[in-house]
Amino acid sequence: MKKLRKVDTMKRKKQRKDAQKALERKAASLLNHPKECCICGLQFERTKETVKTWQIIIREERVRLTCPNCWGTISEVLKNSNVKNS
Ligand SMILES: [Zn+2]
Image (cartoon, rainbow, N blue to C red; front, side, top):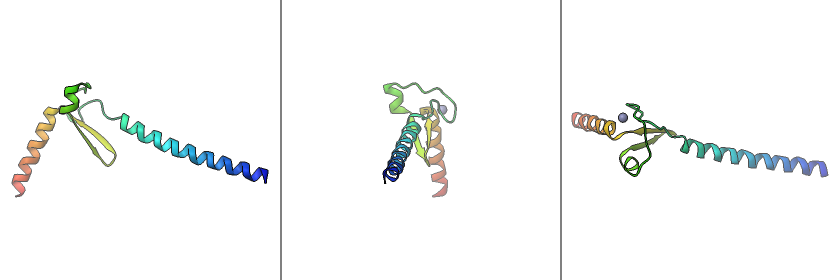
């Protein structure tokens, strides 16, 4: 019985460890967002201004960072394609 209980504890410990690892991975992926524009490669510097103007797009667990310039281009293209489609 003593042996069985020990195995049980180890299993529980492993489960807890796995959950912890999954959480760490999730946190890492959030922290590990790009440090530059995904289009022109402009370096992102975290300031009050850039946080407001840069666009962070999260799609299918991929984080993309877009500088205001490129974001302007993208929304322009989107606007145009919307006009074309309608
Ligand atoms: Zn850019």
